[in-house]
Length: 226
Image 1 (spheres, one colour):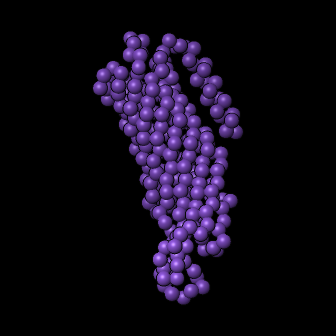
Image 2: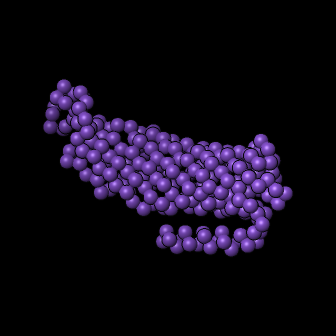
Image 3: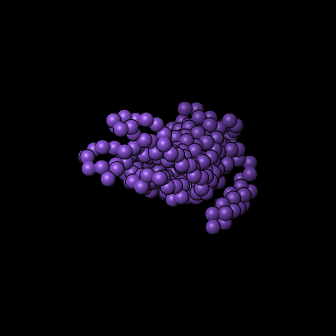
């Protein structure tokens, strides 16, 4: 299913490119910051690079590469057989990263001074997760790593963004600000992990949430046709 969607997007980009093949690509770099409440109010960040391939009227498709991830807050593990309150047996740490190709049939409405943009983005790539179980000593002082698990899985997901583009410095440089909603789900990489400590359960990582994005665009050609 994911491969079919990727093929469909690529076909769409190639077909429309013939309508205005003289357009030069415009390059971008950006960062997005998200806050999610499904696992103890943690946040995560995503960095992106890529290119707006061309623009035909209000259609301005982009292709890029995104890298992001997060570390969860440490979760205390308690030994239920010990009848002493607040005596920790250990700590559980979890973190995940993702590396994805992004296809974005972006829509732009307005003029060079201020475009309103809408971006339904499809992401496909890899998701990596790691979990560490840290053991405490008898006097409840940190000792070190007892067990570690790591897993990698294919991932594909959608995200959607609406924003403003066209805060120009010169005709070669401009910025964009946007509000994002991502459907990334990091749970897949922990489904196969299991520690010997029975109480070391993986925390949920349903990371669909809202975030803010900032981008810097660069047009190295700066021609009248762009």
